[in-house]
Length: 328
Image (cartoon, rainbow, N blue to C red; front, side, top):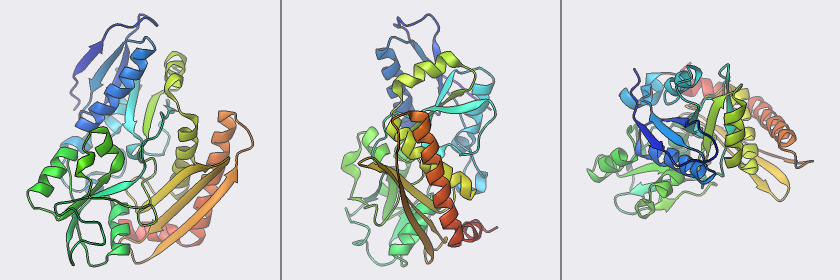
């Protein structure tokens, strides 16, 4: 069941229609939607923020036990299809890669920092944590990469928004927790970070640090408005990541990590698939030279790169690892 809270920002000059922005109600989602609304207000648009409760917000237990995919997005997408909202702001790492008929990923604003961080009650780095320390994470990707480095670590599931997870850490339920650097930065909680985990140790989730703005495919007005916020390089990089994930049929919850970025004029995609316990892994890195500045062409090249990386990972046994990690 959905519940909604509407906040109207009403000083626009670009048109009389109020744009309805759909979002989750968590503190981080609220920050993200307020940021998007503020950017659009600067261009003269009125925005109403509509908060929508999702399955992932109201159900307890590990995310993997709640459902397969889209636990933080399905209800928002239903509201979008029902024309109750005009566009939706997602944490892109939560948005499944499978297409929803009638909807499209229209815009990716400039990406924030992509990495993961350790928040420790003792201020330790990952390698400095004591033997058999307890780390909280709800991510198979993070758990597998932690165990790949520190097989002695006791990895336990943790749920809740950022504040809830920090409170559980402060109560002593965990020795440390792993969070996205971008989320703590956006919430001005940078001082809680004990250790920025290098990408050599922990590759981020597909789309981590990026926002994905989704709208109806046939709404040309909203799509043209959202183009004002799009960062082409961020869009191209995450397209390579998401295409790889889709080609592997892995989904957001599998122990799969990817990092797309630009090095000079080349698009580079680094990816890893791990067993659930971190003892096995497949690592691949490929690059392609972008031949044009035109966005659609770059997106096409990024998608090809993603498929090529997925094909190489499959040849190394990645699909079997994913199935085993899921218990299939």
